Length: 177
Image 1 (cartoon, one colour):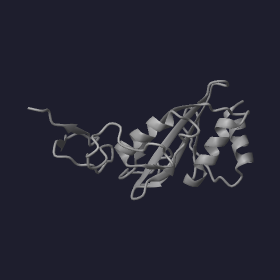
Image 2 (tube, one colour):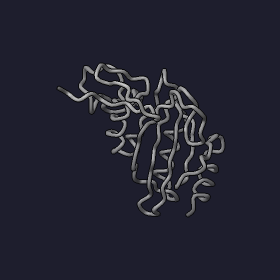
Image 3 (cartoon, one colour):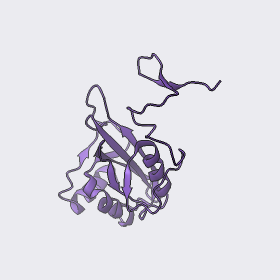
Image 4 (tube, one colour):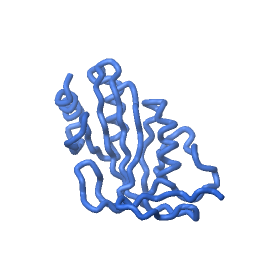
């Protein structure tokens, strides 16, 4: 089965999906609406034709102030949640991107489909502030419970975080004395 075959199956099962194919990637990559994520993931996991049985990665990107729109990045002032799944049977890989507003980044949990998502979703919640509805245990996983803010957001500030002059706008944490 090729990427085109997988795309045809998705389009047949979800004719109104409105997915956008993102070019320039190593695997089939689609930007899908938030409302369609859970049913699409359930189909991709349980269909005998796709059997995406392994969620390899779930992460986020803060698109707060990108200078120019890129095919792979969402619009400015959004958070992009990225799901990469693999079929261990067919050795296919698929990536789904879901664009969320920065002021209300909420999306359904896929932990009932792939149990490993529980940890990935907690990390994205902790570092980006994305709320995964119906998550069985959504709480901080890396930062202390009383931590304020989300450290991977581009507008995050902290007393020990100082701008380092660099073309990329890299930030460095001051060394403890």
